[in-house]
Image (cartoon, rainbow, N blue to C red; front, top):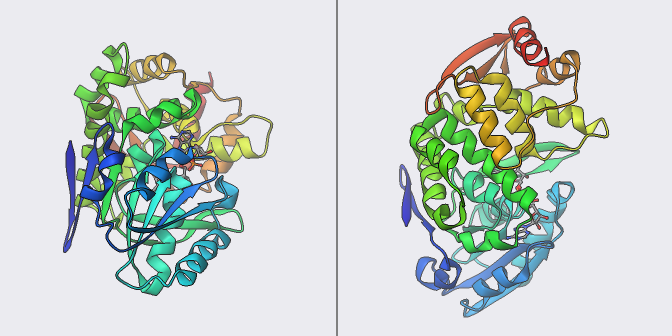
Length: 339
Ligand SMILES: NC(=O)c1ccc[n+]([C@@H]2O[C@H](COP(=O)([O-])OP(=O)(O)OC[C@H]3O[C@@H](n4cnc5c(N)ncnc54)[C@H](O)[C@@H]3O)[C@@H](O)[C@H]2O)c1
């Protein structure tokens, strides 16, 4: 299954297929110097499968985890490109989760003011979320994604077979993003997720549906001026939960925090259906924080404009509306769920 991203002069294919890693030589232009960048914790067989198809390729493994999504990792990649004599016609292939993709993509954006890069996301989160949109970047002094560039990949391979090695918790985390997209924009996908007994056999279709939503949104709003905010459903409170958790003993993955965040912003009948879906796929539906704690962190939400925050509300799966929420509105929304 192939989707195409188009924006001005830029167009590239996103191939979603089991075993597609082995077709990289047909899908990407690998007949040049290639630096395959992977993450420490990513099973090496995936990067090796790409490297084996590069006539002139090198493998570079970067440290993993959000704490290593830094300019130092970018410099590590840039040094390797320089040492191997990469020129403007050469390319980088990122093989790994969102940390690897964001870091390697940003290094490609910086080297010689931008060389080609290909993305091979291997977590469900990165397949569903970071494979489209061209956002690359790293953290600085602990501030997430504060340094970066829009640099579209020249091609993307999504091979659902790579999900076989993912932990159930990371799989569920990625699914939270897919549930988010279905909840706002695709009632059929939402029902598919509700009815599926086993997602494995239908993973290509599920990913294609989720990515089609993201494609349509990003193409319509490349620079995040309006519609793209729909992708933030659940994120206002989700970010607050993540921030509160980082200061406490509770630990939530990003997707888990967004999962709970969606429940704050959903209304009936969508709310009960989303909650059921989250439980079905092993995602959390409650957080331990007080209204004031969440409000404190939500007030720092980067989507805050003037005195209010642009939020996404869902009352029927497959549809949404934007709503400006003041501090008081947000307090009532949070309190309604805490009672
Ligand atoms: N660019 C974008 O549009 C975009 C969108 C969403 C998220 N992100 C970024 O993505 C990052 C999160 O991505 P993530 O959740 O993929 O985290 P991650 O890259 O840290 O990967 C999570 C873990 O999974 C391991 N892993 C990766 N693939 C595996 C596989 N197939 N089998 C077993 N283990 C595997 C990794 O080694 C790591 O330990 C964040 O930094 C976030 O900011 C970017």
